[in-house]
Image (cartoon, rainbow, N blue to C red; front, side, top):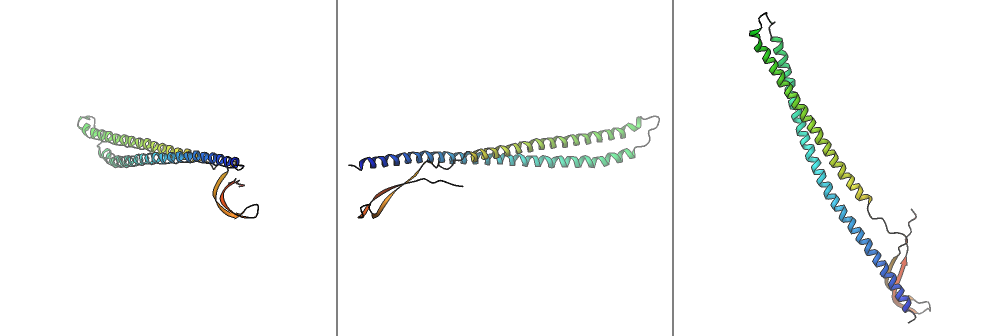
Length: 187
């Protein structure tokens, strides 16, 4: 029974190391779950950002179309102004051409205003998409920064295994051995 204290001490050390390792495993599993949740969130945020970019691209196309229409209308307006006869003393019969020019310019103004509004909407959507992408990247960086660190060098690794060899008395021995080791990283 003189080895009972040694066996009991070894069992206590093994139990302590196993408990610490189970806590470390739980911590690693929690971190892995968090990584998976953040990856799903990042995928959703990036999908939302892609959707916003697509809508912004569509609005930019509409704005370009409206701007092109306004530019095309400019040439028509210029031609209409050039075709106007010089106003005589009595201007009543010449108000119709003037009104056509005014209406064309109002239509042009509406097109330019609509194009500007679509461009502004596209810019807002692109800013929202950028914010979503930044949020996704920030959450992933936060998860990476919170990753579990290696075990402290003060926590030993314990190994248990069978051995065969010679005992200190010089006789052949067979038994179960317990080994304790510390890993110290120099770099």
